Length: 228
Image 1 (cartoon, rainbow, N blue to C red):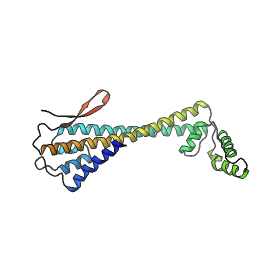
Image 2 (cartoon, rainbow, N blue to C red):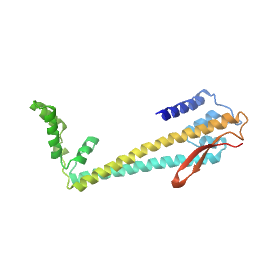
Image 3 (spheres, rainbow, N blue to C red):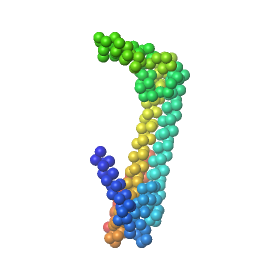
Image 4 (cartoon, rainbow, N blue to C red):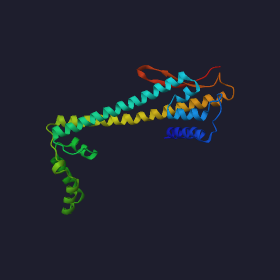
């Protein structure tokens, strides 16, 4: 939570510079506010605007990687979702769309009759002396009619459960990749800010700069470097 708050503060500060015009100036006729805005819209665009084409390319590659991964996980999650729904339709007789509650029931019970037995047991536990409330609870929470199902085999029910779990994991990973898109923008904007503000002091040759090092398995490491 603290790290998220720090990132928000940095983003608000840098964007505030853009809005107020405080950051204008720096490298010749180049505008820091404009460079920050470009980097916020597309990491690397601010570096390209300033003529730092090497760092711009690394930012572009990182951004492309993030959104390629996002699209890949979303497509994978959608395909797996279609698969588990088709499994339920073909091997359990499911006719309705599958929401989370319905999916959990399908995953844990071989048929709606087994599920309804547990619902009635729950109703008796909750309302031991009230038959009318037991029946109301049963009718409200049980699955009947077109919501009925019965799995052909435990193996198919397990296949449904596993595929649904994989689908949810793919969508979760897609969501997580958007965090790297935010991080890439923060890194790009900090790099722009350091470039301008330290260059204004005549320290162009020795100011710290953000660099990216490609590591094994298509991973990257961001770090600060300086010269003396």
